[in-house]
Image (cartoon, rainbow, N blue to C red):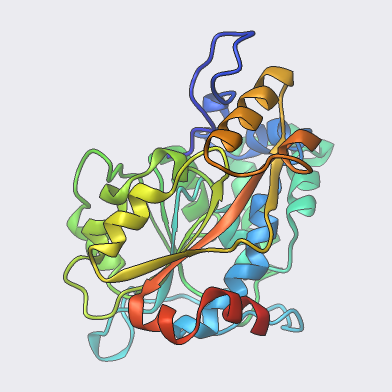
Length: 310
């Protein structure tokens, strides 16, 4: 789920550059080392959007003024056996969205930390111990439970080990149904987040977790403009959900690796009917926010009004 693009023959602008070798390491140092120079930034853009959605889906809003507190132990279910309300981060990787959502840190600070000489010579076990202290010291008192889902087993294990993910599952729902454990853990999910990997997902990943639920979660996805979200939107529409795209702005994802990749992006965006001028022509992939909700909720408060009122 965390692959950055399909393979391409050098010199042919047909697909994105792959970064497969950084997505499933024992710790995230290679990830930040590779993506930092390319200014990968989607999780930082998404943080404020996700925070703004939390109170709308029945989760506590993360306040910038919140003081740091130590992370509490959380049971899988709430009182009286009810499933605990949570966020499900699909394509969670090392738990970066959870780090930004629940801690007083920025993505730039994480780039600096994981590429610094201070952590360069640590073993993975030593880095995990250091990271536990690092994140615990910056934990927000209004942190929300986050469940991670990704095919990268080592990345998910890291997110669990350092306390970023309350639960984590290395499963590929594109090829197999969710395990009973994953299904149970997501019974209380109120918000599903996606900041990377939507190009490699279909409705198969989402529908098994949502079918038969009385209360459907919202799905907030930052989608590259080079691909279509239509399959996922159509699959969720069959469950009575409406997908809206924010057409008021886009968000930089990362710099292109080379001119071939840029030509691919410009051509792909144009083919989908969008205008690459001032965005992909300026050297960056861009994403657009897609929000999927039960149809009645979307009709009562359209996305443009929701964003205006944030």
